[in-house]
Length: 345
Image (cartoon, rainbow, N blue to C red):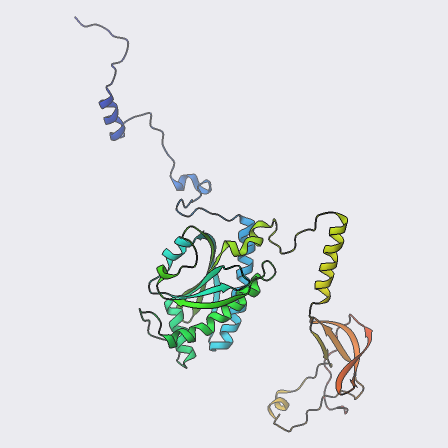
C-alpha cells in the first residue's frame, strides 16, 4: 500500500552540494556576458585601482603633454632626426610597483630635489632609447645594436646629456604649480638597488613613448607625490589659490603679487618693417655683400612686448648704445612688406 505524501522529499546536504557543483540547479540566475551588457561594463584593475580623479588626471596630462612637445623639439635639433614623443600614461602608483615594472638591467638616473626637501625621483631610459642616443651622439647612423647589459661609464655620460635636459624641462613644466630645483645625483642599472623611497610611498609615474624610424622605446619619469604636495592638496591644482583672510592679509598678499609681477622679466624687441627678397637675390648673398632694405634713414620701427606689437618708435642712440624712441601706441599690423631698391639704407 502506497502513501501519498504531499511534501516533496528533502535533500541531504551532500545532495545539495552535488547539485551546486553540477550546475543543474534551475534556480541559478544567469549572468550576462560583457558583450550583452555593452557599455555598462567597466574594467576595474583590483591590483592597481585608480588613485587620481578625472580632473586631476587631465591637469597632469596637460603638464606632461607640454613637456613632451618641448623635449621633442630639443631632440629633433640635437640628433638631427625626425622624432615624436607621445604621452602614453600618467598614474599614481607605489614606489614598489614602479620598481617591479623596470627591466633589469635598466638605465636609470636618480634626481634630487635640491631645495632642502630631501625628495628624490627617477628618470629611466628604455634600453633601445639609451642605445639610440649613444649611437647618435657618437656620430652613428641611429641604428645601434641592442645590448642587454648595463651602460659603461662613458655611455652613461652620453645619456646623461639627454637626462639633464629632461630634468630641466621637467622642472619648467611644473613651475606654474610646484617650485622644484632638480639635479642628477647618480645612476643605477639594478632597479632593486635604487633606495629612492619606501616601497609603499606613492609616486607619480609618467611614461613617454619616443619614436624614430622603426625604434619605439619608453622614457619614464618618476616623482614622489610628497614633492608635489601643493599640487595635490590644492582644489584647482594652480599654484596661487584664491586669497582668503582679513583685509590686512589680503592687502599684504596683493603687495606680494604686485612685487612678483613688477620683477618679472619680459622680452622687448624693436623691429623694422619686413623686407622681401627674391630667391635669386637671396642665393647671391655673400660675406661683405650690402643688402638694400628699401627703408629710409628715418623709417619707423615697431616695438613688440612679449611677442605682441604695442608701440611705434624711431631708431636712435643714447650714450654709446642703440635705443628706440617710443612715439605712439598702435594695434595696427605693419604694412605689407615693402620692395627693396627704393633708396635709403
